[in-house]
Image 1 (cartoon, rainbow, N blue to C red):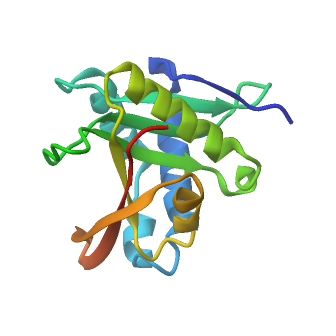
Image 2 (cartoon, one colour):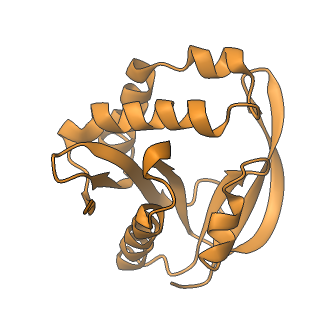
Length: 170
């Protein structure tokens, strides 16, 4: 099946929210408490992504992966690094792909689309955060990401480690 990667439009936000929630529930099962994953809401995710692409002073760039029939099966978001890192001023915020579409090269295409968008915005150096326990971490290493650092974050009532991977250019 041929999947196309394109810039997201405002009407894609509900599909992006569905991919976001569904992907969290499959990817983070056993990593994040079930109660938290069960509490995720399509509506809340939709509000978050709508605000992120329209309301923030530095809106995110979003790309979607779409089937020939028009179904959004994945997305990626990128923009300014959120914590003031001077060495890596760009950040890929998210790459999410429905489980049945993983391991087909679509995630790599979404990554490249984000990297290209960041480069066009002048961010030739960028980073990405991923949960340390995420079994897909090797995906970022295979794309050339270099381990940068770790931090502890809070998701629900849990403290979880995240790992940053960095790219000097793509």
